[in-house]
Length: 246
Image 1: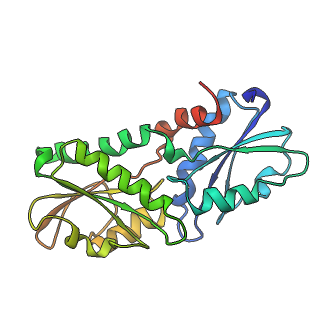
Image 2: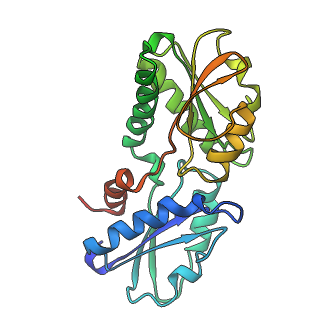
């Protein structure tokens, strides 16, 4: 697919309750647009404007590559997105793997854990890591992605690493049940942008007062909370690669 003749659409979930949910996707589109790698660059959402249907309106390009702004192949990427972009009269749409499938995503998550560890001058072997993700009983993809991240962190020498979820077991609110009884805990939000879940729901369930990056004390335990994934400066090249660029 010739990218110069192709429109790029970043397709995300969005939120009606928290504008930050879509901010990184919109900002990434804004960064890519002036580079003129693609004929057109837009961002569309399931829960925000423009919708997936609206984002296709008025395109000059007849070929579109859709990069899912999701962390895993799951219900939305395999059902909603493919359905929404399957039949668009006069436009050829190709849906790529989600942004979270890029191997660089693990490196970005690991860097967030390392940053928190260095803030406290801790050894990896002393730190318990929790990957806080959404999860859904509708599809196992979300869970597998988060558990894969946790398994990778174990190999990097952390004391322990487990995935915890909003909508599956083990639940985020029950985090104490899945970590050692002592030692510092680093929580890494497995969400693209802070949004409602990463900046409000998850910190609240953990007992944190905010979703800001840094360390706090929760019930006598030191807890570090990581920055969200999806920062535009980190996602820009990954999007190009997924879309078929170099």
